[in-house]
Structures are given as structure tokens and as C-alpha cells.
Image (cartoon, rainbow, N blue to C red; front, side):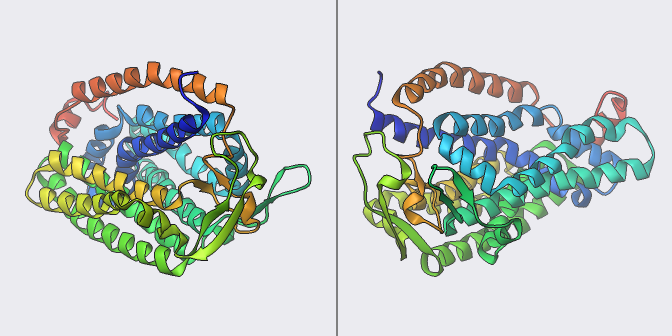
Amino acid sequence: MLFDYYTLKIIWWLFVGVLLIGFALLGGFDLGIGALLPFVAKNDEQRRVLLNAIGPTWEGNQVWFITAGGALFAAWPLVYAVAFSGFYWAMLLVLFALFFRPVGFEYRSKLADPRWRTAWDWGLFIGGGVPALVFGVAFGNLLQGVPFQYDEFMRPTYTGSFWGLLNPFALLAGIVSLSMLIMHGAVYLQLRTEAELNLRARTAVRWFGLIFMAAFALAGIWQGFGIDGFRIVSSPDPGTAFGPLAKTVEVAAGAWLQNYGFYPWMMLAPVLGFGGGILAIVLSSRDRPGFAFVCSGAALAGVILTAGFAMFPFIIPSRTAPNGSLTAFDATSSHRTLNLMFIAVVVFLPIVLAYTGWVYRVLRGKITEEKIRENTHSAY
């Protein structure tokens, strides 16, 4: 074995976080531009500029999301089981919203009828805005605890409802997610467009960046002082194999701030979230979209890490039966499975990153209305 069991558990917690951040960075600007489509572009050619800015790469970006789901199933099978039962209707909503994307990209420009194209524009808006909102709502519910418990056969039973997911704090978390992805998408749009579209994208960066930071600050205050967190009181050796019910968990006010007290360096995550957002707005307003894109990506990573650090080692806390909460230490696959998967990651992740970098290098440059008119039959 390359690593001991405890180390591999930590490595896979980090790796799943990397996948989520990777999807937010790459798939996130796709979703953000989709949510902006009916509003930033004022005519058909401008909308086609937006579509061609992300059309050649959105499918590859979506792979990060699929890979995160696969890694969740392989590394944390109990988490996969609880999440896909508890958030079943929310995930179906995301899935049906995403259906609009491949069909919309491929068929929107096949007919010149304005009604046909407008209908697909709103479909792509749903395909971008709804997943971005729901992902944040899911994180908001994780921070509050999910209503699930185990029966006598260790089968997880979800006792909540879809409408229960749409509580005030979760909706605020959804606004954080939606606004930051729209900001990120607007920065990318500014990087790839010129003239009128470029100016509108710059305006969108400013407004949605401000909304993102205000919502993020409010969610942080609410999380720290208005929501009871979870903490482990006693547990078996985390380097051994044990079930979720072998530990004792306490629900207490301010528990989600505990890790920040033990490890002050974790404060870098919220600083990265706010600092990245501020710099993205400033650099965008000064027409430096390349640096602004890096900073908006840092803001996304900071937000995800802020939630991850606050919850660690919890992955899905149980509001109904806290002792049955799932953590990075008791919801994992076997030592051998984690080790084999780690080897696969070491081999294939550099290949994926190299290929992704090559694709974006080849496709770099501005998308203009003139290019759309010149390639009207081959462009999206």
C-alpha cells in the first residue's frame, strides 16, 4: 500500500474538493453565461457570440461534474447512497434543467425562426441558472444537517421533503452560488468578446460580484451565529475501518467555527473568497479580464473551501440522528479501493489537465459578430 488508511481518507477528502472546485472553475462559467444569455445579448448575432464562446468546450467542462459523481460513488459509497436518496428530487431538477443544454446548443441555430431561437435561449437560461442555484441550496442544507437516519438493517432513510430543502438559509446559499457563477461567467465573457458585449459583461461582473460578496458575508454570519453546527465528541481511531454509528456527535451553537479556531490558517479560505471577488470586480472595471478571471476563480475556490473547512470531517451531517452523520473517516471505501483509485488519479489527472490546457490554448481569442456572420452555417 502506498499510504496508510488515515492518509488516504484525507487525500480523498481533498481530491473530491479539487473536483468540485474544478467543476466550479470550468463548468461554472458555462452555467453563468447560460444564465446571462437572454439579458446580456440584445440580438440574435450577439446571442450566438455567447454560445460560441462556450459551445466548443462546455461538454468537456461537464466531465468534471460527472467525475465528481463517480469519485463520490467509489470513495464514499455511503455518502452517494444518502445524497442520491435525500436530494433525489433536487438532482432530478438539475438533470432536467441540464437536458436543455446539449439540445439547445445543437439545434437552436438550425432554424431562423425567432420564436424557435428565443425558446431555446430561455431553455439555455434554465440549463444554466437552475443548476447553479440548486448546487448552492444543497450546500446550504448540508450546513444545517440533513434529515436522515439508519434503520435496523443500516439502510439510510430520508425523512425530509423537496420543499423542505428550500428553506431561507439554503436559498441564501443558492444566491451565493448563482451570483458567483454568473460573475465568473461574465468575466469569461468579457475575456472572449469585444465592443458592446464586452461592456455589458463588465457591468454584469460588477453587479453580480457585489451581490455575491454581500450574500457570502450574510451567509457566513448566519452560519456562524444562527445555525447549530456538528462536532465529534468521541470516535474510534480514524485510521481504522468503522461504521457511522460508532461515534458520538454533538450539535452545538458555533460548532462550525471550531476548525477555524484550531487551525487559523483556514481563515485564508474566506479571505480568498472576498479578496478574489473584490479583485475580480476591480480588474474587470479596468479591462483586465484575464487577471480578473483568475481572481474570480480564486473567489469560487475560497467559497467552496470555506464551507469544506467549516464542516470537516463531516460530509453529510444528520439532523435527525447526529451520531449517524457521515464523515470523511467513516463513510469511505476500503483501504485497498482508495489506494487503487489514488494510483488511477496520479496516472490520469495530469493527462486530463494537459489536454484541457491544450484545448483552451487552441480555442483562445475573441468571438465577434463578424466571425458569426462569416461562419453562419458552421457556428452554434
